[in-house]
Each structure stands twice: as C-alpha cells, then as structure tokens.
Image (cartoon, rainbow, N blue to C red):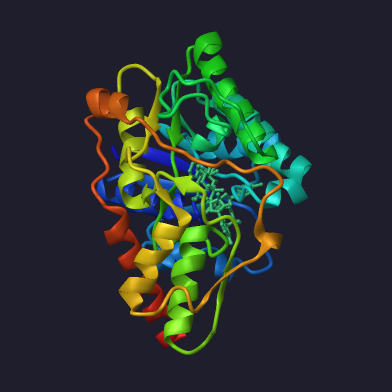
Length: 325
Ligand code: NAP
Ligand code: GDD
C-alpha cells in the first residue's frame, strides 16, 4: 500500500517541491487548498513541476478546525506536513492578527485535527529561523534561545512550541524543522532573492530600468528549497520525533546575493540598484547563520546547492519566463 501524505500549503514553493519528492517516493499525495476565485492560478507551481495532475487537492483552510478534521478523516494520512502560513514577514506588520490566526493558531487547529482523527500520523511543522530574530548566539542551533522580531516570528514561535508540547503531552510523532531561508525559481516574487532575479531579468530584457530594495546589509543563510524538503521528509522517517535546524552554515549579505544575479546577467549593478527607505522593516533580523550539525549527524542531511548556483538558476528561469510571457 502506498503511503498517504497530506500537505498543507501545497500551492506554495515548498509544497510543490515536497509533493514532487513524495510522488517520486511512491506516496499518494493530498494537498489542502483554500478556496479562491482564481483557482487556475493556484496550481501554477505544481504545473511548473509537471505534477498538478498527480496530486489530489482537498478544500480547506488552516483557520477552520471542522474542515481540517473532515479532511484528515477523509484522507487518513500516514504523514502530515504543515507548510501553510502567511509566510511573508513584511506583511505580518500590516496583518498581525491574520498572521497570528493562520501561522500561529492554525498550527493548533491542524494538531488538534491530527490528535482527534489520526493520532498515529507523523506530523511535520514548518518552523523558521526567523524565531531567532535578534540573535542570541553567532551560530544558531536547536539550543539557541529565540527572540522573535516580527508578528510572523511570534506566530511561528507559538506553532513551534505547540508542536513540541503535543509531542510531550500526547505522544504525537510531531517534529519541527527550524528551516533557514530557502529559495528556488518557484519562490514568491515578494521575497528578496526572487525579487532580485526577476528584477535583474527585467533590466536585462529592457523591461525595467531599476531595482528598488530596502536593507541590503541584512545577512541570510540561503539554501535551495529542493534540498530542504528532503530534510522535512527525513524527519518523519525517524523512530523518534525531534526538532532540527536545517541550514547551509554560510551567511551572505543581500548586497552580495544581488551581485551574483547582476553578474550572471551581465548587467551593471551600481547603475540600476536603488535603495528605498520605504522597504525597510519596523524591526530587522540583521543576520542569520544556522548550524546544521544535528541534521547532518542524525538525518544524514546536507545542503548540496551553493548560493551562486541557485541564484544563477533563478535568473535563468526568470529570463525564460519573461521571454515566453
Ligand atoms: P509560501 O510559498 O508562501 O506558501 C504558503 C502556503 O500556505 C501557500 O500554499 C498558501 O496558499 C498557504 N496558505 C496561506 N494561508 C493559508 C490558510 N489560511 N489556509 C490554508 N493554506 C494557506 O511559503 P513557502 O516558502 O513554501 O514556505 C512553506 C512554509 O515554511 C511556511 O509555513 C513558511 O512560513 C515556512 N518557512 C519558509 C521558509 C523559506 O525560506 N521558504 C523558511 C522557514 C520556514 P495560497 O497559494 O492560497 O496562498
Ligand atoms: N522581501 C524583501 N524585499 N526583502 C528585502 C528587500 C526587499 O525589497 N530589501 C532588503 N530586504 C531584506 C529584508 O529586510 C530581509 O532582511 C532580507 O532581505 C530577506 O527578506 P525576505 O526574502 O523577505 O525573507 P525573510 O528572511 O524576511 O523571511 C523568509 O525567510 C524566513 C526564514 O528565515 C520567509 O521565507 C519566511 O517565511 C521564513 O520563515
């Protein structure tokens, strides 16, 4: 019998790559999607990977407990991956309560649905390096104290601790992946890597003349989403549920990440990059640098894609998309 997985957030970047991985491993993949008037747009990432017809979509919303209970009852998953969230940090200051309701309390809803309907299912929670915020150690590991700096990070912290609590209280096989930033050609256009690769491609093709960014001194530990979904799956294959940092162990400024994109396209960065104070955040996470030693030792997981290769892949994908579009 094929294993069954339920993936919330299946229409997002990670949902698409995770579904592809699970299908390759022979899973039956079900994905929770929120109803939208533009349902055709929803599956664009699954289509990009050529798997939109191979997954089964189930209507539901992370804020609606009764719907989640029905979905879990219907699918009877062996594994549940909770990837759904309001995931854009900057928006979380504009919509703090919505972010809390989806990204925080939503985790409680899905954990409750699993506990009540399918308590033997294995559960993955998409936690975030944003929880480290105002970093308390130069390299962040599973032992580093958290100090969230945005409504998004506060909500993620609630989801993280609730996952730990359900594991300890009810014996659920619930694991939390503390994932550092990961990107790909399927990254949402609002996030900085994709904004840069799309912007550079537009300048290259004469469709734009400038790229406006905020704080380019911020540093992130960037990896490739394709690598990171493997770590999610590995966590649920362990006998014991646990929490893991997933990162590359290298940090780079937004400025240097940008330079890779401009150089790859053969476009002069200084002539086109504009700093816009409107794009600065009310509170910034200045630097993130993960220590993935535990994931390497216990899961045998390592990042395999360099930032350079990933950014070049993203620029090429954006050039292709814009030429076709
Ligand atoms: P993403 O592309 O923004 O995808 C978010 C997904 O959540 C989308 O499928 C979205 O559906 C869905 N969603 C939003 N609100 C929902 C709701 N109320 N009910 C049901 N579904 C809802 O995010 P991602 O980059 O794939 O990240 C996946 C998860 O990992 C997120 O929880 C994110 O916070 C977390 N994370 C990401 C990173 C990273 O660097 N990418 C790092 C650490 C943690 P629509 O398509 O309908 O909008
Ligand atoms: N988005 C964006 N747009 N960010 C900019 C810009 C800009 O124009 N200019 C500078 N930045 C800086 C931000 O201030 C931040 O310091 C950094 O670039 C990265 O921003 P994002 O790409 O939006 O990602 P994030 O680090 O805030 O959050 C992402 O990673 C988290 C894991 O650490 C998201 O994927 C979160 O969902 C995830 O949890």
